[in-house]
Image (tube, rainbow over all chains, first blue to last red; front, side, top):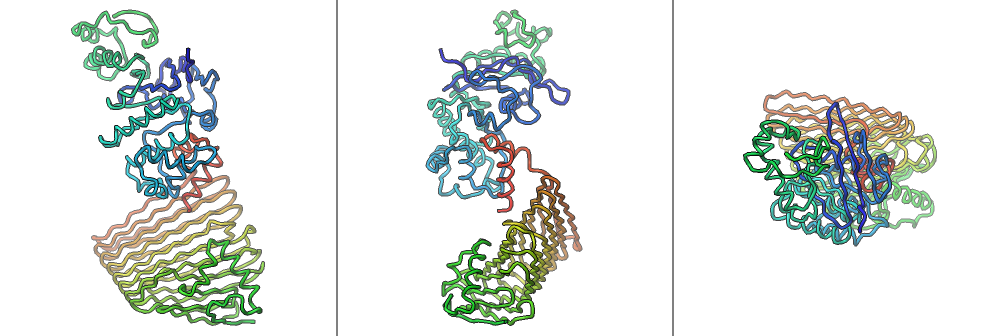
Length: 277
Length: 328
């Protein structure tokens, strides 16, 4: 059986007196698109930054294993050189750095054809964009595509894509989805944070996160059932407060939907206890 | 011996200055120039080594008048009204020996309706104690357009003082665009002092880029007075300093007439024990004018840095790339 390329074990993160991630466990496999869904502020981007090793995102407990090696305390550069990279939700802008150069930064050894191929894969004509600066003269959507091209060009082992769909027009979503599938076919493990159904459809596995806790991991259809059956009633009862089925109003909401006996995976529970509600 | 030589681009045909010319061409290339361009008959060219004019090549619509001074050259560069100069005019200034003074008195007159670009390269590749002082006046005529790009190369010793002091008048509907770049080798000491008066509907755009190392000292003083109705002004200052280098940027923008719009944009990156200072001054004397200012001074933006680290660059490589991009 294929081993996970990335394994997250009991990962917790506190920032500025707030619990951001709470006992997160995840496995991501090569050639797999693993989508992470959750409300705004639920901890999706924080998990991405923690996986990448960004400043201020060192976990308080737990560990991250990449191909069996503990990378919890490795720097961003060290992780990148192992083959992990991140496409930021709002990519930085670089005055004076041409798009072509930026896209080629992670291509080792340098390969001009690969840069051209990557730009074409995100529908940015290389002759038009290759020499333009990756600065604020690019629109939000163009800059997102450049970011995706840079990730694709790098041939990473694990690509963490933080909402690659935000700011992208509806017609281009198909191109982004195709690129994500293409990466997976080429063996890349893709960890995809998204809000869009069009991209969720590319996923092999979907995890749901709420208040820093992974509630569910499974196939996309099961995740959809779980979300509509349990998360929506929970949200209707408690808004975006942490998952708490002990609250009478949540029990009432679940009961009225006939969902009281739906099993919840152990790992998905914030208290770690196995119980039916 | 002082001499002024007018040539028809017979470079190297006069042994007395051939060696100096060869050295200037090499220095010109180090400053980012393309020596072959200096030999094209369709390109107007002025080459000054210390106080000697090595080449003064005019084309239709452009006139050079140059005379030697004890420590430099006095030059008037005139572009005829309505002349559209297709190729950039190449100017090359430099001092080849380790020590010397070059004092340039320059007067640029751009006739009404003319369009011209200048590419000036100033090179002091061996400088241990060199002073390059420029006192300039520039007049941009009505509806004329001048783009003046100046790049410097100072070698690695830091023994250069560069002191350009230029006063500019841009007449109605005129455009003045200047780009000053000192990012190769050491700076030494640079005091960049420009004042621009902008008349009705004129446009002024000034970009200054410098990268200071060791104990380099960078002072940028820019004043743009938007005196005319609907005059527009933009200053962009990009300075990076590292080691013990110092930079001080003083930018002033005055909105003195209805519809005048000005903006000052300053970014300075500081590393090591270097110190950067920015002092903007905004003056508005008309209630229909507007001037804005933005400045970012500090270390490299963390978000930019992490984006590059995530591609496998180490921190030094990433910072260098960001700085090189900014001052490119």
